Amino acid sequence: MSQMLIPNTVTEACQMLSSGNRVACAGATNLYVDREKGKYLDRDIVSLHRLKELSGIREEKDGWHIGSLTTFDLIEDVFRGQGSMDALVGGPQIRNRGTIGGNILSASPAADTVPVLMALDAVLVLVSETGQRMVSINGFMKGPGRTAIHQGEILTEIV
Image (tube, rainbow, N blue to C red; front, side, top):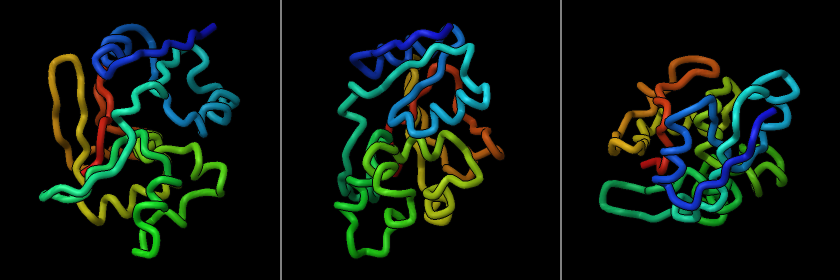
C-alpha cells in the first residue's frame, strides 16, 4: 500500500523524493489511468500541490519562464490568440487540472507540449538537494516513458 506525502517546500519535496520508492505528482490527470495499468502501485506519491511557487508564467530577457505546476488553463489565458499550444491539450477538464511539468515528465508519445517545446529548444530547470541543473528538453527526453530526471529532482520551470 502506498502513502501520500505532502511537502510544504521545494527543499522538503526533494528530500522526500531522494529516498525510498517515491514519485512526484501534481495535477494527477494520469495517475488513475497509470495505476489501473499497474504503474506506481508500489510507490509512495509525493504531492506537489502546495508548492505554489512552481506555478505561473513570467517574461524575462532570456524568454518565457513557465512554472512546472502551471496548468494548461493558465497557459491558455496568458498566450490566448498567439497561436500557442494550449488549445491542442486535452479537453477542458485536463486543461484545468493538468500541468505542463506533468505533461513533460510523463514522456508519453502523446504528450501534447513536448514537440512544441523541443522545436523551441526549451530548457528545463531541475532542482535537487545538491543544487540546480539546466537541461535542454531535447537531451532530457530519452524515449517513451523515459526522461533524464534523477532521483530526488523536481522540474521547477521551463524556459
